[in-house]
Image (cartoon, rainbow, N blue to C red; front, side, top):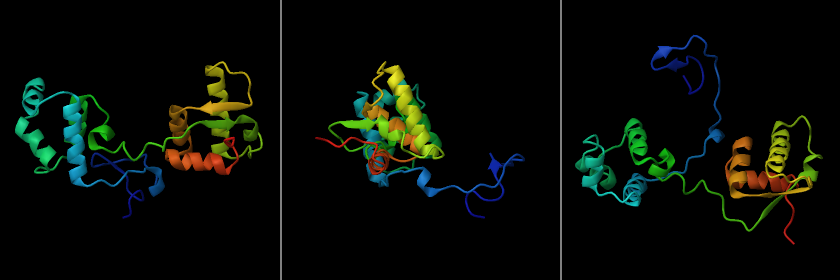
Length: 187
């Protein structure tokens, strides 16, 4: 049976309230990394925390053996999802940071992004994405106490939020805004 269709289970048990659903592959964008790149990232996180392999073992109270962490970092041992989550929690970093997935997700640096709030009024009121952008702009203006209501400077964190609202990555979200005439052109 294809993924997302038919019997839905929770921890091996049938889920009686499940309804058939289809998942879009475009929902999650995960950069393809080799196991070597992931291993390098795991080692980089440990070093960024200022820990040696022995210190990891000591600090974890023996939960993480130095030889095991070293094996992950050398690609000599497979790291399960469950252990990756536990290791990320131990290092107190997000899982994507531990695995090195954060690098390709970031938007390309841009000088300045300015949202033309006036242009949002020209978008279709029935379009959910457009409504989300209008609501977001209104909220940000209120939080910043910017009552001009014509333009809004978009920060990198704002672009990340817009990407979440649009269910796209940051670069695609930027293009979406640009194609709909919602960004002011640079002088």
